[in-house]
Structures are given as structure tokens and as C-alpha cells.
Length: 72
Length: 279
Image 1 (cartoon, one colour):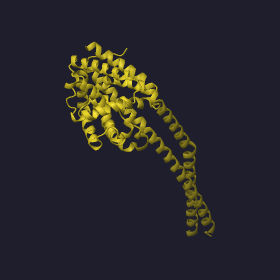
Image 2: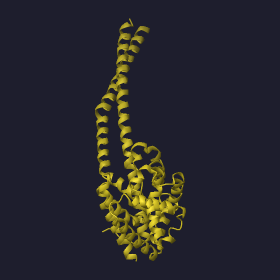
Image 3: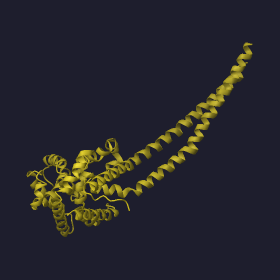
């Protein structure tokens, strides 16, 4: 009596396992992609920090020397 | 009853299993078809942005006498520090690790190093002790950078007051470095130009009450003591010398970006403008 259900369950479980494997692979690729992007963006981050620091120093020095003027 | 309940349970189990299966497949499709392509697109856009902003990196690198090349590969150690400290750490680490790069362009270093006497001298002293002779690629980097400026300054009595911090023992090294630095420059006129500009800047500083050197470092020290080299205005003043060097060096160094000299020129012009009204 229970044989048919068992077979169906087993087939569905097999499909699920298959799907999980594929899903895992895709997630791994996604992670790799994101890691690459992060590594590349560190350059941007550092440049942003440098620009910010430069802006701060320029503002400070302009203010200190009374050279600061309103934007045109 | 038992059989009926069993059959129901089996049917429910199959239903749930099917749901799980469909959900998993849905996730897979979503990730493969939607997310990954968009992420790759984002990566391309980031690359484009990086390419567009590459001149900024070169500019700051040259201005701060830094080698940020490590960023591409071994950024992790440098990146984590706070915004203010990151540059300084980079500087120190680069000076120590990337010294080999400096000999190629010794001129760039001296300006900043001479300006910011306190931090650089320590590094330079350590480097000198390790490798006394400028000819050695690694140790010379710190020296070479500092030496040309300091040597010029020493020649000028005016600068002495600002650069008292520079130790006399360096003088020998400075001479060596000056020779080394002068050698790469095709034109001897560049050195003269640099001296003129430095003299002007020194005069400005004296009249200003050494505003460029004293004022700029103070803010930097207050807010970010270590990063003062990069941020402080004195570097900008020194940039005038850097301009000449960079412009002349450009033919020699294909690596340098074309934008940089122009930017420096602009910056220098601005600096000159800023300085002149005060005087």
C-alpha cells in the first residue's frame, strides 16, 4: 500500500537534492563575483577617503588663511 | 482510520516536498537569471568608475609620495584602518615595503618629507641605518625622497630654521640622494627651477610667519596627526617643485598619467595665487 507514496517521495527528494546542488553552485559563483567586486572597490574606497581628507585639509587651510570664498 | 490518516499524511508529505522542490528551483532560477547578471553588470560599472578615477589615485599617490600599488593586491592590511589613518599607514608600510619603487622617482619624495620633518625623519633614519648608501634600492627610498629637498634647504640659510629637525648625519646621505635624484632628471634646469620655487615658498613662509609649514601641519596634527603629510597644505606648496619634476619626468616614466602634471600645474597655480595675496 505505501509503496507508491514511497516511490513518489524518493523521486521528489532526489529532485530536491539535485536542486540544492545547483543552487549551491550558483550561490558559490555569486559569492565569487561579489568578492571580486569588493576587492576592486577597495581602490575606490581608498580614493574616496583620500579625496575626503584632501577636501577637509583644503577647507581648513583656506579658512585658516582667510582665502576661503563663497562658491561662485 | 489508520490507513486513511496514513494516506493523508503521505499526500501532505508529497505536497510539502513538491513545494520545497519548487521553491528551491525558484531560488536557483532567480539567482542564475536575475541576480548574477545584474551583479556582473555592477562589477563592470565599478570597473568603469575605477578606470575613470584612476587619475585621482595617481594624483594623490604622486602628491603624497606614496605607492598605493599595494592596494590592488594586498589592500586588506591597509584598507581596514580608519579614513584618517589609512593614508599614513599606507605611507609607512609602503616606504618600508615598497622602497624599491622610490629610487625610480626620487624627486617626489623629498618635497613631502622635507615639509613634514618629524614623521619622515624617523623612517628615513631607520632606513639609513639599515642601508646607509643611497645606491641600495630599498633603503635609499626614504632617504632619496628627503634628501634633495633637505639638501637644497641646507644650502639656503633661510630654510634652516624650519628644517632644524633634520639631523646633520643625514647631510651625507642627502648629498648622495641629491646626486642620485639629479641624475635621472634629463634637464639640469629643473633643479634650478625647483630651487627658485622653494626660495619663493620659503620667503612666503617667512613673511607669512611660516604659515604654510606651521599652519597646515597644525590642523592636520589636531585632527589627524599621522595623515598630516598628505592633507597638510605644505605639501601643496612643495608641489610646485613636484610639478616641474613630474612634467619633466613624464617622458622618462611612461607610467605617469598625463592628467597628473596638468592637475599639479593647476594646483600649483592655485597655491601661488593663495600665497601671493597674503604676502
